[in-house]
Image (cartoon, rainbow, N blue to C red):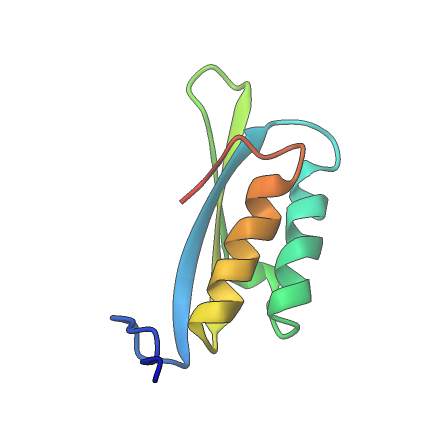
Length: 89
């Protein structure tokens, strides 16, 4: 009998996800679109932005309402596979 996957996170909870990509037109909108697919109630007041020192990259921290480990895993996979994304933490 398979045992359920263990997690240290108590769901549901607010969970920050950091995304780094180019400071380019459409980047913020594209990432917000992806996040809303996994957290339809997400709003931009739950977003922090931070520009890199050289101004080439933009760091985004999305605080999402996480309901399961599967939701978070799929969100990480989707963000990581996006062509504009350099890093997801």
